[in-house]
Length: 249
Figure 1 (cartoon, rainbow, N blue to C red):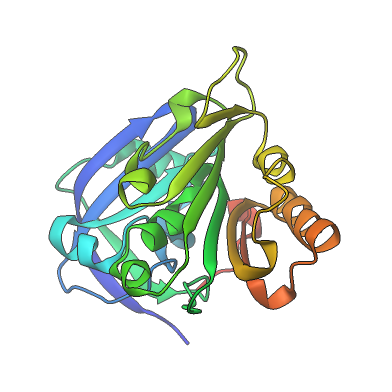
Figure 2: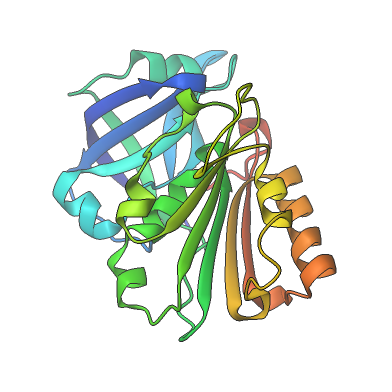
């Protein structure tokens, strides 16, 4: 089913390391969404500007924050990608079109269980939406932890926000050269996952993971083969290159 198209005005554009763009916008008509869902952003075809394309991006904040401060996307600009040149031109006051909202990567409240959020790069976006939401605060979760992976310090968006929401967070930096101290870890999120304490409550935790497909496949192998985690305790969403994105219409 086609989502409704919303006309939105850019509130803020912030660019950080690694080509990551934090894009905040305010729709003319507010729309509802579940923490973890995504929208589809309309962008011009770089090879044929008269043709418009749709690209999927997860919302990076929960609904209650979006209503107060604007809806937010966390986007990595891919060199030569369809959205790259378009994002370069966007500034506060510009207007964009989005379709909303889509996706089943949402928090399931299972009383008494822990929640582990695992993400790489801009896969942090839906995890932030979940971590900062009133939904997880109201849920009867035993604990919440996050393992977030980036290449370097410069690429970390939203540093400290998971912790302020009560989520114990470890940052895995794959290209760090120096020795790191907690909460930073030199390596990948899967390295952190392999080195969790033996008494971690694997059987009583729900795992939400978002990021590149290779990370997700490796993480699932660790969870299932190494610790017997069941399928129904894993919710995963792989971020794909725009050329392979399913077009939402």
